[in-house]
Amino acid sequence: RATNMARSMVTRYGMSEKLGPIVYGSEHSSDEVFLGRDFNSSRDYSEKTANDIDEEIRRIVENAYDTAVKILTENMDKMHFIAEYLMKNEVMDGAQFRAVMEGNPTFEELDAMVAEKRRISEEENRARAAAEEQARKRDEEEAKRREQEANNAAKHAIDPIDIYTHRMNSSRFDNMMSDQPRQDSSNDNIDQDSDTPKDPDTGSNTEEDNHDGHDDSSNDQ
Image (cartoon, rainbow, N blue to C red; front, side, top):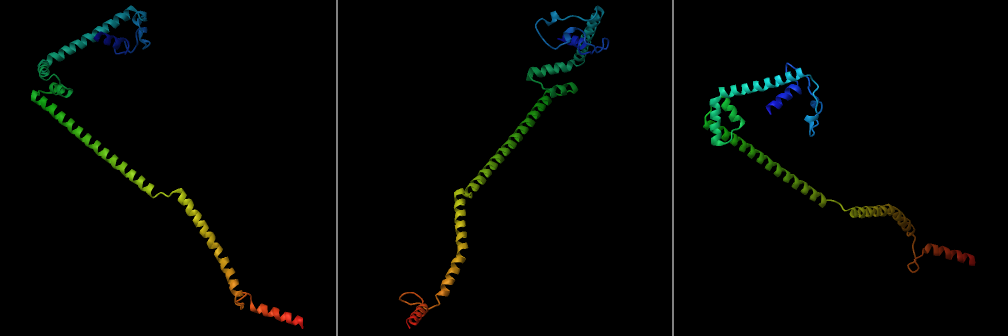
């Protein structure tokens, strides 16, 4: 894997100062992967360039190896400490590893880091659960309030049939009130005519009867 990574760094990603930022080999002209690609790919560079590529690959791998050995050698005591801790606890997170590499913590201090991290995580979980519970209660109260408002609106809603009946009754009442003055005026005329004495037996005006009788007598003469 280290060799393949170094080859990609040289021929594909242009990370070699000697060869420069150039893609070497037709196998890198496309990202398509298919069976037998390595056999069908062609080399579009000279033998000298191929030797330079191999030298760069070797240099990168050897330098990385030497660097890794140096880091492990200089921190051998830390490596043993980490190995002992893993033998005891089986797990070491990034914060613990960083603390070991940057300082000299004890097993108890590393365990305290784990306990503190667990405590913070539990507090965050409780706070999240409390917030979710409050949100749930708030949503339930809002739903109840909306349901109550809907029920109140339904109780006070007016039936369309009632509205139609009310309008019809109002129209009839208005028509009756508009006809009332004419009836009163007709009654006034009747009352004015009724000032003339009437015969209680026939109900006709006595003056008209007298006048008619006088005319009849005149005609007889």
